[in-house]
Image (cartoon, rainbow, N blue to C red; front, side, top):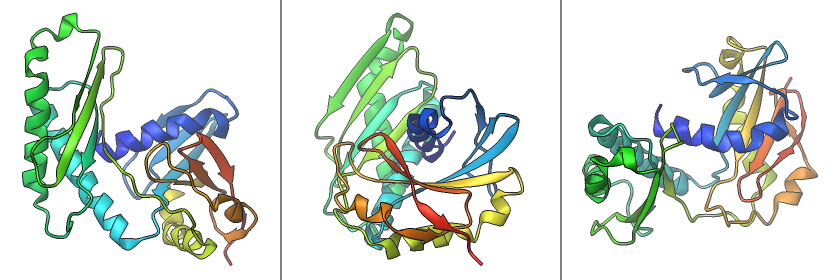
Length: 246
């Protein structure tokens, strides 16, 4: 499972009990053109497409570069050590992400993680859990990282720590995000009976989206059966009011 898929699944599982009214379900993560997740519930297949609420193109570029570095580092590390770690990476803020050598940064990060747990690997069977935090790894683009291992966890989750937050976001921006996804609805529906759009807030868990109440009072154009915003900082789901496209 890629870093992007594992992070989406990790975040989605925070909201599924509320989304599905506590009902039992099974899920898969198929490949495009199908949605990110397909849920089997009450004899029905429901697709959920997940996207981030990132209105600024510069931020989108930064997060895409950071995701790529972390994902590649995870692949490099797990090729040598198939250990399910939860790794959070803190990147330097003032970086020209267009010029970053992603491969070099990924190799450096994978090697750093390996170095920190090298002495633990041989005794992993005796370790029920451990956590390590490194604040300065000596890299121009990577500030530090923290990692966590728990023997009960079977899935890895490597992700960047993001500090960007949008205190106010316009309805037009949210509509543009929905519009980008609407064009793919036909492909999503080839593998499920209905499809929902889940737009996730982005940023650190302590971030707060100040203008959220303005979005709730508006109506959006959407051909998804449900259009939702997942408030990662609050652990709650809000369903937006929508009307079908014509």
